[in-house]
Image (cartoon, rainbow, N blue to C red; front, side, top):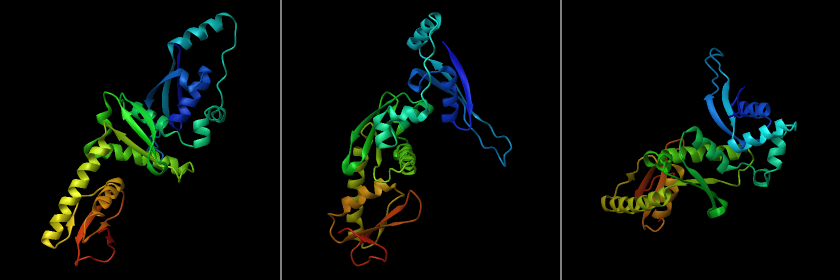
Length: 249
């Protein structure tokens, strides 16, 4: 197999240099990450990213035939041309499915990504395969982290109006059903005791699920407390609502 190693300040830059050396496109090679880039401490110990690009077998045979025939190797299209050749990326911005596939490959997770349209313009990325449960993590924490990263990348690329939602093994539906039952049970407890009930820290998506479930509960208010991505949710019975609460009943 024909292969070369490339170095760069980032993984993408290292891959680009390896492709340029081979004279092929990204979809014609297998990429092995040999070393991630490291900034070091105060500039000491800084390392470049290093990858190995290996030409896939069918292309390897074609390149050998062209070389024997004296033909020129196909040029590598510049990054701009590669994007222009992919209408889904050029027109829509970030290709969330491609980014997620690359992340899963770096995580050594054997899975595929299916794309579907969700509610309110959301793009749903569904992970399937024998190792897809590894993408979920404890209480969906890995899934939430991947979703957060991809949406931040989309925002930096000017895609504020379009969000990506990640799912695996039908986890989101199961999690939502569990949270809805929990919300109703805790709302009843808050009413019975006449005291607020506090849930464990939840992701933004989980908090929205609980809020929606509480909308049908009479005499109940809810509010988030804390800062950051994961926040606690307080369910407050009528008559003891505090400032800053969000009425949902």
